[in-house]
Length: 314
Image (cartoon, rainbow, N blue to C red; front, side):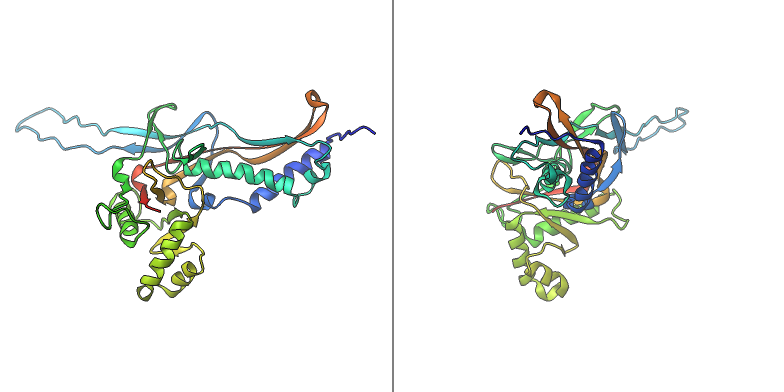
């Protein structure tokens, strides 16, 4: 008996709808922590940035108009490479699994692509040495210039909080002083914190333990609800920061964990195509059914001053 599964129109529609439905149920937490916008074309600008300038001292009785133009640059979302997943449905893989939104096959494919979306928003890539702050997103480089393909701009040294801030010479984990230092630095910058903008932070299990200890130590001066949340091991809001959890946070070359703190309105993710799925028979592979899931998403900081990175020893 031959193995022949012909993908018909209703199969294609069912698989596509299954992927979209599961994608809505399994969205990664960073989507809610940044500003999501629709994007089209080769590139889309997210902000016209006005640089700082100094004043000019004029001369008495001068009839010359001062010429002191404001430095301008522009931040771009560039149409990215695809985030994708796909596989053939052979004899060992049930064709019906692709038609079932609760099947591990469908959910696993969505999870795979969502991990890519998460990494794209955070600005990290998985390498042989672990996760590294590469690409764009919250932690990577922002493309800046008058046209697409401009100059990649990395976070400046001043955007990093030292690992030994509490005790110079001795790197420590996440502390109240580091959190307050990062938040205060953003509050002092004029980039829009006068609005009801939310502040988010991304931590690993190590920093979750630090927060639990911090909640216990400062419990008398904190909201009891906040303390209970952290004591229960559930990252939530503490000290004005909405804490999220992930094991994909990168380290620096010294082994310190790089904990990002950012403003939601200051990080923009452009969606050319959200998570979608297709299904067809591949005539070049014995006409086997093939399932494919992909997404096109890019992310960039509007302004660097709205992001701080806390170095934490583990």
